[in-house]
Amino acid sequence: MISSARSSRKKRVVESFASAHECIGTIEPGMSLFAITRGQFSMLDAINVVIDQIGPCSVSVWTWAIADYEVQCFESFMADKTISGGRLVIDRSAENRNVALIQKWRDCFGAEAVRVCKNHAKISTVQNANFKVLLRGSMNLNFNPRFEQLDITEGGPDFDLVAKIENELPVLRPKCSNIEAMNATQLGLAFETGTLKMFGGIKTWAK
Image (cartoon, rainbow, N blue to C red; front, side, top):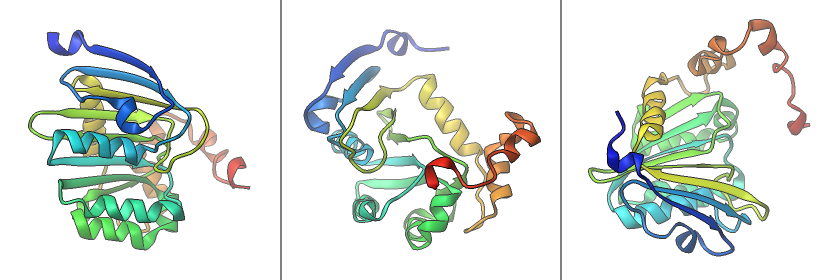
């Protein structure tokens, strides 16, 4: 059952040419924001705007890749004492490329804080006793000067669904196999085995 406060969301639509702070505005209970940017800020910037407003919180970050130029920003994010807990949902390929950084996340937030799977979603949750904020969009962890899309909601079944999936993901060993990551993602429930074999080679965008 969705509460009346959540079913009557305070909706905003923004075309942004400005900073993450100006685009996102005030985080409020039951809010809903859809924004189109020119890539002038990143998902990490958006997450930090939420953290600055709601105070001490736990955070989860879903990402496909962490590029070299994002490492310093990512490490700063881990060092933020406002964050009491952090969960990283990361694609297996990214863990293989960033072994030391992913291990540092485990050292910072605990062995169960990293969930390796097959992931291309860009999602984050930021929550404490007063807020359950869900961010999702096209943007990666770094800024990218082109059209990007961002949705932010507070509370509701969309947040609950992401939290449910996060909690169901198994904790895999560091540098797990591709089969283990596929099984963790439950790809077998969505694809026939023969279909999945088509994706076993080098991806077109990786050539």
